[in-house]
Each structure stands twice: as structure tokens, then as C-alpha cells.
Amino acid sequence: MISLEGVSKQFRGSRRLAVSNLSLEISEGETVVLVGPSGCGKTTTMRMINRLIEPSAGTILVDGKDVMKQDPVILRRGIGYVIQSIGLLPHRTVAQNIATVPKLADWDDRRIDARVDELMETFGLDPELKDRYPSELSGGQRQRVGVARALAVDPPVMLMDEPFAAVDPIVRARLQDEFLGIQERLRKTIVFVTHDIDEAIKMADRIAILNIGGILEQYAPPEEILRAPANAFVEDFVGAERGLKRLALIKVAEIGVEDGPVVDREASSEEALRVMEKFGYDWATVVDEGRLLGWVDRGSLDGRPSLADVPPRRFSAYVTADSSLREALDAIVTNQTNVAVVAGDGDRYLGILTVERISQEIVSS
Amino acid sequence: MHTFVDVLHWLTTSSHWSGSGGIPIRVGEHLELSVVSVGLACAVAIPVGLVVGHLRRYEFLAVSFANLGRAVPSFAILVLAYLLFLQLWPSLAFGFGPTVVALFLLSVPPILTNTYVGVQSVDADTVEAARGMGMTERDVLLRLELPLAAPLIMAGVRTGAVTAVATATLAALIGGGGLGRFIIDGFHTNDVAMVVSGAVLVAILSILTEGAFALVERAVRPRTSSRQTGGTLAAGRRSRAVA
Image 1 (spheres, rainbow over the protein chains, first blue to last red):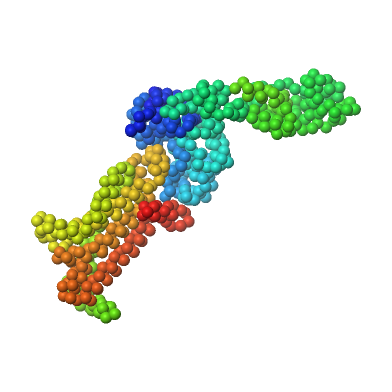
Image 2: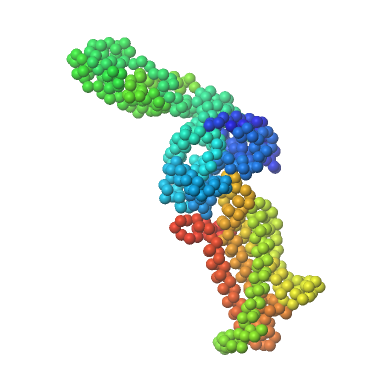
């Protein structure tokens, strides 16, 4: 969808290259995050895509067409653009701001109104805000209006330059989650710039890590960057906790669960003890036709012939197959145990996950 | 006290309010000089200021020109223009032509400076976002920069206009009309009441001009809030430009 071929940029009056011979291939519907320290040319690279900056060398194709051979104004109307400070027009209402590009594209008023309403709903903006001015909005609302405005004519490509950086961390996390949900449905091709590696890991399908002077150090999915950083620069940039960060990207189902001690609620105490013995635990999971009921330990079986006489206790460290390893580890640690039970749809018992298995996964990265 | 009564008497004498040398005619001449000069100054300074502000370049030239205009005395310009007109268009030399030149040069600096500062101080990120969305340079200038700069531009026009009204008095020195006539003629005939009356009329006209433009300035201030008319934004920008 977007392809950069040997793109370089040297600003007038500067001897260094801001971007050096950069080649990147961005597929349709993919979110690529450009990340790196200041001076790495990530914003310059993004701004060359909609020609706010013109490359000194190389070719940039959007949807197969060379951007340098198009009218920049027409090119930009087909590319959504969001910047950190958002830059809403201060003398226009929220509705007028969202309608900016549709108006430039000469949509009729009814179509514009309908589109504004639709976008405000998508972004959870109260219809009452339509006639407010940007100065009357909260930071989070402004950010939402900015993204809604960029999506107004439904462009296939979006450029987002630190779009969530200007709000506090709690609002930021919520905006990120909302945007991921919206992107799940819209499947836009997105180039996203940030200096925050955690945001990159969260938002990206692929991350491009850039070094000073616009040198591409690694271009890979977040999980791969954390598991196998290409060099010392990437390893350093990703930070000391890359093992832990990677856990957030791996689902329990992906590493598989272990068999654990499990018995049916109709079983005899004798059988339960045998199962505990076999797995080397002093407790066992109790199921009813595969459905998770809880657990019993050796002590509670004392003098009771059958499990039917022992009410099973609830698991506190409980995760699903869709949970991330990070959530699993959190459940285990906060419950001061070393095992979590894993359930599937309808509370179906799948197995257990031990802290040893998770730490193996950290070490392997 | 004696003079005050005389002035009051002079101003209320009905014969001073009629005829070809009466107050209404002189006010009309005075306004004509001011309106023509400030109109020409706007026609030149606003477009130039918009372009300089939009390009965010050549400010140095604009600043230099504006300061030069302020530095040269209007009286000197008046005399030089008078000599020039005598050579080229003698029919305009007595009053109107040279005065318009002097007032024009006097009103251009505040209008030019305020226009480019007003455009330039529009938030750079807002301009960048507008451009990034596919607004043409013309759209950026006319739909974004001009409306946001409008109050500051009008403040410049106000300064230019008030200065022009006060200074149009000079026209009488080279045989022109306007309220300066009363001051010059009163001086030559030793009529103190007439001199002071002329000065009072010029002052009143200047204050009315100031008031009228203050209203215009408020009217062109873009709305930036749904609750009040006129935004805090434009006011904030003005104080910055003045500082």
C-alpha cells in the first residue's frame, strides 16, 4: 500500500542526512509504527509520505502511485493526518472541524451532517459537543475530534504523529484501546510515529526502529523485536524489561498448557489422592463433565469417601486461553501461588500454567 | 477660563457652521483626506502583510520599511511631496496630493506590522494540520490565517486611521482644506479661540475614529467559544503582538 524505496532527505543548510536511504514496505490494513530517539527522522519520514516534506532522493509510492507525480493537495485529501497538538481550527466548531475535508471535497450538506454524526458516535463524542469550540473540550475529547476529522472522508491511509502524546497516561491508554478497537473494524493502512516503545509495542503490527539519521535498525512484528533484537541499538532501545514486555504479546493458548491433576466431582477420594500423587501436587482440580468447578486439597479429603462430600474451593489464579502471559503471571503472583488454572469457552477446563513455564518463556527471549 | 468661554462661543456661533469654510465642510475635507490615505494604505499594506506573514519570510524587509516610515517626520514628507507635486501635478499640489502621500506613509507601518504579525502568530501546528488535510495555500490564508488575524489587522488599521486623522491637520500648511484650516487661519489672524476650536474638533474626530474602529475590531473577532461572543484567543494574541 505504501512503499519507500531508497528514500533520503537532507535539509537545506544541514550537512547530515535526516533520513538515509530508507526502504520500507507497508501492506494494506497494517499498522506500522516508526519509533526511535529524537533526530531519528521518524517524523520527517512520515511527512514525506504526504509531501509536507519532499524527499531529496528515492521514491515513495502510495497505492502504487508515485507521490511526487501527484498534486500534493489532492494526495493529502486521500490521506488522514493527525499530529500531536491536533491543530483543530480554533474558530470552527467541533462539527465544522470534522467536516473540514468533506467540505474541501465538495460533499453536499446532508451527507456531511450524516458523516459527522456517524464519526462522533464512533469516537464516543456526545452529540452535544457538535457546536462547541475546541477551546471548550478536554484533552481527550480534542484528540478524539482530531482522529475523527482525519477519518472524515474515509481515506485508506492514515498518518499519525504521536497522536496520543498530549494527554495524561490514563486517558492515553483508553484512547489507544479505543483506537485499536476502531482499527480492528476499519483496517486502515496506518503509519504511526512515536518515541515511546511501549506504545509502539501496543499499537503496531510491525515496528520500524530508526536510529539517528534515519537508519533502519530493525523492521519486524513487536514480538520478534522483543524476542530477537537485531543488534545492540535495538536491544538498548527496547529496554531492560523486554522479556516481561514480550509476555504481554503472547497468549496462553500460543504456548500451550500443561496437564495437571484433575478429577471428576463423582470420583472417590482414593482416586483423587492417586491423581495428586501422579502429578506431584497436594491438590487437584475438580470438574463436572469437563466444566471447571474448583479445587480440593489432600487435607480436605480426610475421612471423606467421595469428592461429592467435599465442596470444591474456587481458583483465585484463573486465566483463559485468550489471556496474555503477562496477565497470567500477574494472576499467579498476586495470589501468591505458583500455578494458574486455564479455562476455555464456557469454563471448560484446559489445563494448568505454572510460573516455571512462564519464566522459561521470558528466558527464551 | 477666558479662553474656554471664547472657544465655546466660537463653536456655537452659527455662521461658523455654514458656508464653504464652515465646520461641516472642513470636517468633510478632513475625513476625505484621511479615508483616501488610509484606504490606499490598507490596499497596499494588508495584502503585503498577509503574504509576508503567510510565507513567514521577508519579515526583516517589512520591519525595516515600517520603522523607516515611523522615523521620517511627516512634515518633511509633506514638504518633499509638495515640491514633487508642483513639478508633476501642480493642480494637486495645494493640500490634497502631498497630504495623502504623507498620511499614506504614516498609516502603512502599523497596518503592515499588525497584519504580518497577526498571520504569523496563528499557531504553526494548526497551519500544518490544515495543510496536511489538503487545504490549498489560498485556503490556509483565507479560511484560517485571515480570520484569526482579523482583530489584529483591524487594530493596525485603527492606529493608522487615528494617526491619519490627527495628522491630516497638516494639509492646511500647504494650502489645503480640513480642520487644520482653523488652526492655521486662527494663527495668522491671532484668533486664539479659532485655533483652539480647530484643535478640539481634530481631537473629537480622532476619538470618534478610535471608537468606531474599536467596534469594528470587536465585530471581526472570530468566535472561539459557544458561550461568549469574541474569544480569549484573539485578545491573547493582541497583547503578545503589542509586547
